[in-house]
Image (cartoon, rainbow, N blue to C red; front, side, top):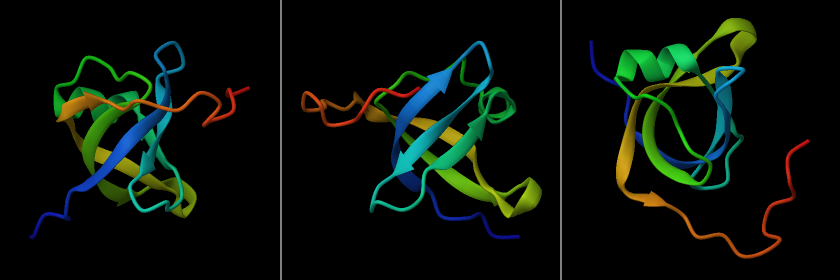
Amino acid sequence: MMNAPKLNGVVKWWDATKGYGFIKPEGGTKDVFVHISALEHSGLPGLSDNQRVQFELKEGRGGRMSAINLQVSQATQVETAPGADAPRP
């Protein structure tokens, strides 16, 4: 079985208390859900907002795509322009 290609993205937000968050993939496609279990399987302790990551996609419940096999990219933080993203609710 071949591995899926690694995609690059930036952590849009991560909520350690709830154990999930979203990654904004490069190329402007739809945000990708990431669950704490995917981090545990990848050996990562957690994620930070604006952190660069590589990941693979897996179709989850209800056809929703989720991130698996995550790796933190070498350039870990992305500088954002003031007001570039509205605060999350």
